[in-house]
Each structure stands twice: as C-alpha cells, then as structure tokens.
Image: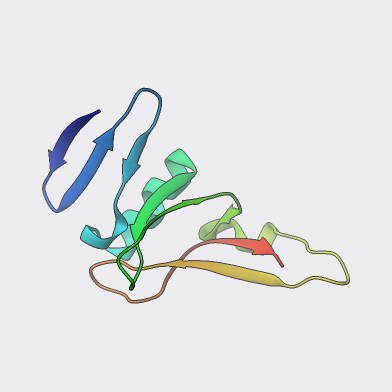
Length: 92
C-alpha cells in the first residue's frame, strides 16, 4: 500500500481502490468523491476507521424509492466542516 497526499486529503492507495478519509475534506468534496467512486473511508467519533459504500448518492436521493415497510435514511460521515454530512441514502 502506498500513500498519496493531496492538499487537505489523505488517500491510501491499495491494489484496487483508493480509500479516502473524509475527516480531512469538506462535505462538498466528500459528496463529489462518493459520486465518482461509490465508496469512502471515515474515522468515527470513537476513532475507528469505517468504510462507507452503497446507497444512492445524496444528489440523487429523490430518485430512491423505498418499499411500504421501509423509509429513506441518510448515511452520515464526519467532514472537516460538518459533523453530519449526508453522502448517500438507502432504504432502511
């Protein structure tokens, strides 16, 4: 695994996918990367590194249709400018 540094962004480059740590990016940057790659990595408030993937990007959330027994729910990550940045939505 190699390490690439882009200003205010930390990217771990592995064999197949880059993992982007959201805590060092703005909410807008995080949403853009999720739309492009479909996955992110964030550090939780408890310090654990968590992968984020799946769901519909927040920009397309109005296109998500959930069944009668489920609701549309956001997937939040921590960014440098927001404690709760909704990057995607899924049916829950």
